[in-house]
Length: 121
Image (cartoon, rainbow, N blue to C red; front, side, top):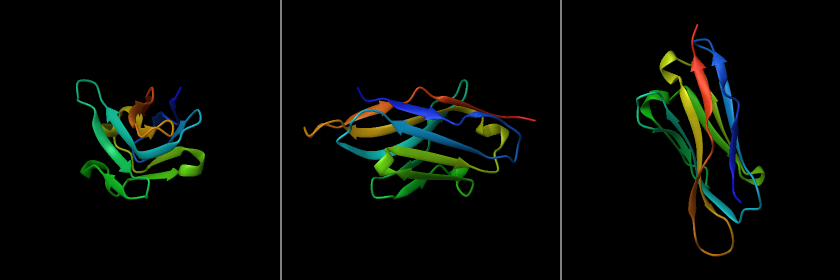
């Protein structure tokens, strides 16, 4: 069974940095796009950053220049380096990936369980 597991969240002061990691477990035939979303209380889940299997990246305007998404396809991992963190970055961050589990040409959407990021002094 495919699972996405995040790590790296925590409490950080404004201006600080955190690095989130997400790994896909189990044998997987192919991973397409990998993304990071976040959801703050009372706010809809929003896309933070995305990276295609070819390495093309896309960012929300609110994090451009501060966050960097990267992936290691061989290790089935995606990362989110977050710098110059602001209190408004506080949210639960979720890893998401479009995965083809086996040789059958079917792709499914998978989510991690989320990791809390709190930016506060």
